[in-house]
Image (cartoon, rainbow over all chains, first blue to last red; front, side, top):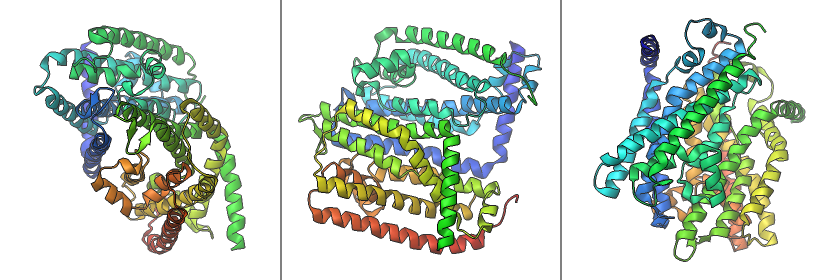
Length: 267
Length: 269
C-alpha cells in the first residue's frame, strides 16, 4: 500500500515537471479552459433567454450541472485519458512488456503512469461554477449536501475509470482503433444537459443501461438538493456505490482477460 | 486545368479507398454528427413543451425536430477537419512532400473531404431516416423551398470547406497552436445556429451572428428547407450571400496561400 502511494506520487511529480517544461502551451490551454466554460455559460444564457425553466430545471440548476460536467470532463482528461491512450499505444507497439515485467499490479501501474496536470483548471472552474449556481439557488453553500455529492462524484470517477479501461482493453483484440474514445465522447455528449430533457425511455436507458445519469445529472442533483433535481431520491449514493463496484469488478476482470490475449513485442 | 482535374480524380479514388479502409474509425466521427443534434433537439423540445404555448422563439416541438433533423444533414455536408489537422501536417513534416507536387494541397484535402462525406452517407442516411421516424418532424417546406434548400446545403458545404481551409492556414504562422480548430468549430456552432435556431439567440449575440459567415453555412439552409423563409426574394438573397462568402473565401485563400508558402519552413523533413 505504501509502495503504491510512493509510486503514485512519483508519477505525479514527473507529470508536474513535464508540465513546467512547456509553459507557452500551459498559457494557451488555460485560456482555452476559460473559453470552454464561457461557451457553456453563453449556451445557458441563450436557453434561458427564451424560457424560465425546462421541466423544473432553472438556469441556476443548469449552471450547477454545467459545472459538474466540466469537472468530470476535465477530470477524465486529467487522470484517465492519458493513461488509457498510453495503454493502447503500448499494446500496439508491444511495449506493454515493460509494465507486465514490473513487480507491481499491472492494472494499477497502467492506470497511474501519466497525468495531464493543467486540466486541474477545468476541475477548479467547474467546481466554482457549480458552487456559484448552488449559492444562487439557496443562498448558501450546501454543506449538508456535499457529503453525498462527494460520494456520488467518487462513484462517478470509478464508473468512468471502468468504462475507459474497458475501451482501452478492447485494443488487445482490435489493435488499430485510434479513435475508439469517440465511443465515449459520443455518449457523454448526452450528459451535458439534465436527463429530464429526454423522454422516459431514453432517461431509463441512460440511468440503468449506460449509467450516464450517475456521472453528471445525479451528482449535480445531489449538490442542489431540492425535490425535482434529486433523482432516485436519497438512496442515490447507495445505488451509485453499487453501480461503481459492479463496473470496477467487470473492468478488472476484462483487463485480466485481455492481458491473456497479449502476445508481447514483435508479435 | 486538365492536369488538376486528372490529379483530383486520382486523389478522389485514393481518398475513397482510404475511407473504406478506415470505415470503423470514420463511422465514430460520423456518429457525433448525429448525437449532437439529437441531444440539442431533446433540450429545445423539452424547453418548448415546458413553455406556456408550447413554443420557444417561434419553434414548437415539431419545428425543432425538423430544424435539428436538417442540422444533422447540414452538419454532415459541412464537415471539414483542415483547421484541426494543418498544424499537425506542418509539425510532422507531412506537408513538405505535398508542397512539392505540381498540384495545390487544397485539392487533395478537398478530395478526401468529399470521399469522407460520400462513404459515410451509407451509414448516416439510414440514421437520418430513423431519427425522423422517431421524432416526427413538422416540415412546412414547399417544393421550391426544398429545391433551393438542396442548392444551399451544397453551397454551405463548399463555403465551410474554403473558409475553414483559409483559417487552417494560420498554422503556417504558428504550427503549435492546436486551438484553431476548436475555436473555429465552437464559434460556428454557436453563431451558425447549430446550438439553437438563430431566432433564439439573445439580441446581442444575434447581431454578432448576422455579421459572421456561419449563419449562411448552417442556419440558412436548414431554415430554408423546413419552410421558415417565405419570400423567394429572401431565399435568393441568402443564396447570393452564400455565393458571395464562397467567392470571398476563394480570393482570400489565393492571397493567404501565397504568403503562407513563403513563410513555410520545413519541420523534420
